[in-house]
Length: 216
Ligand code: 5GP
Image (cartoon, rainbow, N blue to C red; front, side, top):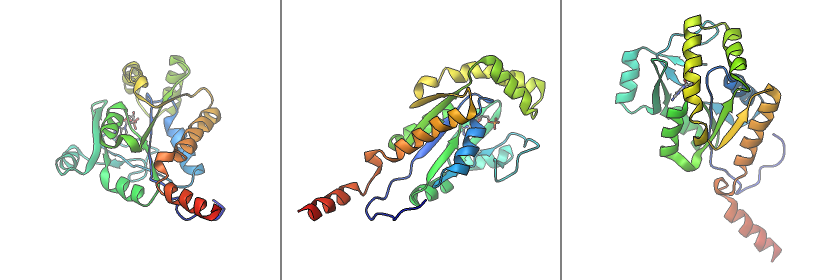
């Protein structure tokens, strides 16, 4: 980013949540956002599900066993957690707090259960986006082309998609991912607009007062 930093225009970090059924393109959208948007970091979840071949421990997830996950829940280390497809997923709290207090926004790829918990804990700081596939056929094609899961797992994900979709109305924004660049532009616009929200711009009162003082 170029331009001089203006004193008094600090902003509170926001929690930007992307949810969708598996295969709707959320992972690609997250990657593009991280590559192209300064000031945004990804929340890396802990999970008990097995690692897929293309995934890297610590980058895509923290892969842990059930016992370790249980300890994280017991010790209150997770901001939210849920069971999805018989596996457990949760958001480690400490990195999120560190990023937010450093004025960075945090991107979450979590399901509706986690989004509800975040909303309960920090309503004003959460901006949620639900990504819809353009059709069921498209979703199935994407799950197959990913070629990372067995046919049985894909069937399970298709069955679950309908249930996940039923939570669309709990989200602040809905994006239909028919074309990845169009969907990306929409998601980016949401983030840009939410960053400009008056309530998040904690230094604004002082800034305007100073402007008024200069105006006399
Ligand atoms: P996958 O196994 O395909 O990576 O993820 C399955 C589902 O779990 C996705 O809908 C994803 O958004 C969700 N998920 C991933 N991490 C978390 C988490 O930390 N908390 C919750 N609640 N859901 C998560």
